Amino acid sequence: MSSVTVVTFYKVVSIQNVHKLKREVERIAFKENLSGTFFATTQGINTTLAGNRKGLENLISLLKDTFLIKGLEPTWSESFKTPFKRLKVRIKDKLLPLEGDFDIFDLKGNHVDPKDWNDLLEDPEAIVLDVRNEYETRIGSFKNSLIPETKHFTDLPEYIQNNKEVFKNKKIAMFCTGGIRCEIASSFFMSEGFEEVYQLNGGVLNYFDKVNKEDQLWKGECFVFDERVSVNPDLEEGNFEQCFGCRRPISNEDISSKKYKKGVSCPYCYDTSSDEDKTRFAQRQKQIELADSKGLKHMGKSARK
Image (cartoon, rainbow, N blue to C red; front, side, top):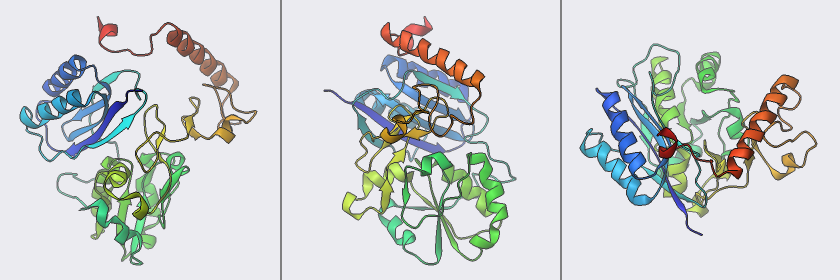
């Protein structure tokens, strides 16, 4: 069975003409039959794309040569299925919305190479903070990490402000899936007066890629925002499915629950979702299954004509 190559990367960099960037990325992506997400802002780019390796490399060359976006550090992996149904290239106001008066270009945490990350995990003077959403942390995290259990990334500032004493006089080391959330969160921490701020360069995915499995201090799997749902420390597709009612990762045990219905509900959302929502989700699932049966899974180049 042939595999699909997946690449993830981001870059905080000033971009003058995001509309031209969007057009050129779409041109190359449609030509190379790539799928996934590409977000462009005046603050930089954030992307996960899937397709053939050569096509992905051509797009990266476009970013480097035409738009002079240097220092990209892509993380590569393989998937036995296309992890995205379509291509989505969007212009956004910010890389990530986070309230606060801070400049991500001026305030930057120290990037820690994955091979040096274990030292921080075992440093008694460091607090290693998982800045991902609660549902992501449920299936895996680093040993000795602090999990704030925030529902959304936008909840993080309130958590930090309410727990300043916890972080006082400590090294603050953050991690997330690919690094972009830590990039923003480190700027926020520094705007609040914290000085020793660190972030895992390239996130958990880069750690999986660069650190030998026997030396890793990760427990479980890592949630990803595509149809793989999770990857293991070998960067292979994990063992979780996803509830499309609440978007949480679910295990085989969850699927065997009476509260699970494909595309509608799972044990984590059954009691909180309304009957109206369940009906709407069930109708959506029927439409998805109908499209799949007709071979209309992907809304790419052909759908745009």
